[in-house]
Picture 1 (cartoon, rainbow, N blue to C red):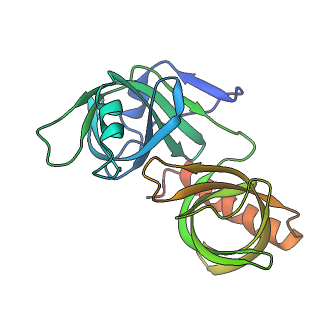
Picture 2: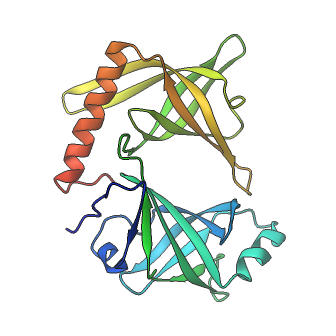
Amino acid sequence: MSQIQPKKDSAVELELSQQLVSSPYLQEGKTVFMSLPQQSATQLRAQVVQVIAGQSLLIRPLAKADQLDVRVKFNSASTLHIRMAVANGVLCFDSNAQLLPQQAHWTIALQWPEQIRVEQSRNYPRVALQQAILLERTGDMRRRAMMLNLSEQGMQVEYHAPLGLIGEELKLLLVLPFETGSLTVEAKAIIRSKFSEISEDHVLHGLEFSHLSDAANKTIRRYMQERLSGQNDGSMPS
């Protein structure tokens, strides 16, 4: 299996998109974010429903049926910008787009991209890890949210409403699965970013760990090393 190899730059341009043909990234069921070129502030989540490697892929935007203005805006675009979280960062590409009105659900056909780049943080690679975590804000909030990915620096968390203001600190409790069993980690994290999709069904939060204890730091680092080692051996997570 060919792998996308990171370079020293923070953004890596890949000359041949054929490198993705045999990669595990663009697969049916995967989640991507689409936006209009030069308008990244307006993003919409979509699901990949069909992949013809090296030729095209079909995506199904996840938006409310009554959001006609959103549909018109994206349906009239000849090109869409696509972003997708991968182990080493975020995979990005622009693609020619075509609406498929004959489909029962809102579906857009994308031409296989000619150029692809991976925006990455070499120091803090991420791994996909979808599980519920417990979050607490001192005195007034205790919630269960969904963690989407994890790194030694922090995590991305999904919730149906904002968990707080940017810069606020949260306490969190998560369970990391190992082959020999699970370990519980208690930590503090600061809200560094928030992103609410057009559909307003949920909010994505970027959390950065703050003042990790030695035990928590060692547990998270060990988990990341095991997951990344498994990916390098070709056993990509589902």
